Image (tube, rainbow, N blue to C red; front, top):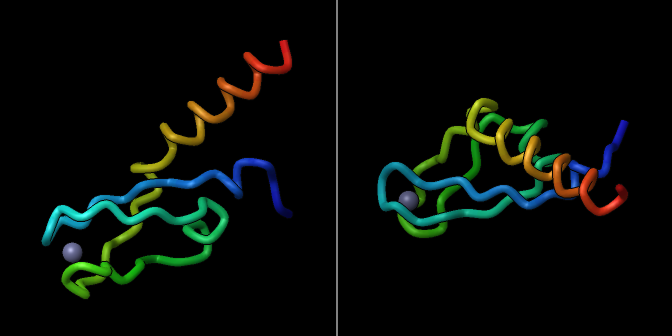
Length: 66
Ligand SMILES: [Zn+2]
């Protein structure tokens, strides 16, 4: 089931070249890695890396609706 946070853009930093790659949270949930544009190394998606971003998104939503 799709949630609002699935459309949240998450930035992941490539460990190889430092480039930030943005991807949708919903997409990241279904993929283990994404290819870096800069160096073509796969950027491993670690759920722990974007949990905080989701929490922040939730907090913003609460603030807006309150
Ligand atoms: Zn890279």
